Image (tube, rainbow, N blue to C red; front, side, top):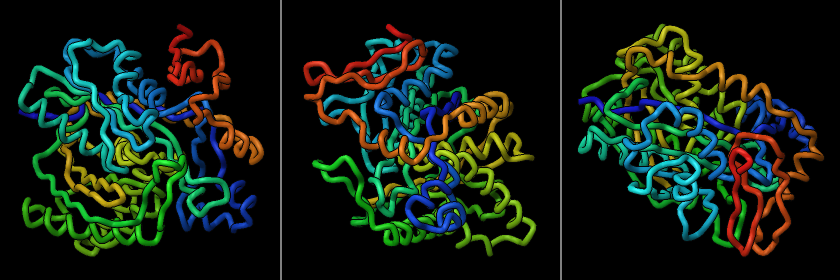
Length: 390
């Protein structure tokens, strides 16, 4: 029996910031951001968007095509939780119209949690092949104005339906993983912004990728030549190149060119959205599947998941027949193209005008007449949402 990804969709806020504008405002050379870091634009989260709204809006893309009664579990991966007790999955379950007879759980481990959710979903469906699991990976990368990490901010969500009818890809039984205690990235309880040692995080990322690749080859008997492309967790897109470059000498020049071309395809949407934390790897996968020429059913794609702190996993998927018809690449392109580009003054005002204080009952800036899920403010220190103006 094959278990894998049946549906997959992406959502990001309708605002963006150009990295050239950011570089000039921070008195940096634009090439440092656009080439050295590998970012072109980043999505900006207004105060009426959070991980719940983005996750719901991503899943709404396909949820009406699914028999909701078959969805037995909702796993919500995030490190940008809206509550220290109540799971974002419960809010999402309600807005997506899922049944009460369901498990709805939130999972946290930096950027890695989306992959853990995916693997738990795979294991559950393997035991219950008539059931499905909805996985949502939703996050907001927020480092602060005029900080070194500002260029690696972003926001968005990827939703995936895992089932025994994998219309996009089968998740192979070849995963390897590891955990190290590393102080490279963290967010204190009393802080709304993340703290990071960028150089250490990059070193840990590259080292864990190389160690896992060595273990993967020994355990699976596969070589790099058996792969047809890679998707990576990308806090910034250049990081993926640093990892892949370590193993490219294992194949001939023609295969190296193919991997480089497909890495550019896998980087494209991340380059234009920014860091998604738990959703980053899966946006990279969407980018690869939507943009790469020549991919076909039976192709093996490698995936490297990483979460600072640090935890990593390396595994592969095999593309299934007709996957191109399920991936809505045109819709994704249109969503990114439709974003409104912000001035620096607008961006900084939006960044500072969030609604983190539960005692502040001032409404958010949520616009009327949309079909999206929106956070509209606090009432009695409880989050208030609306969807389709209800």
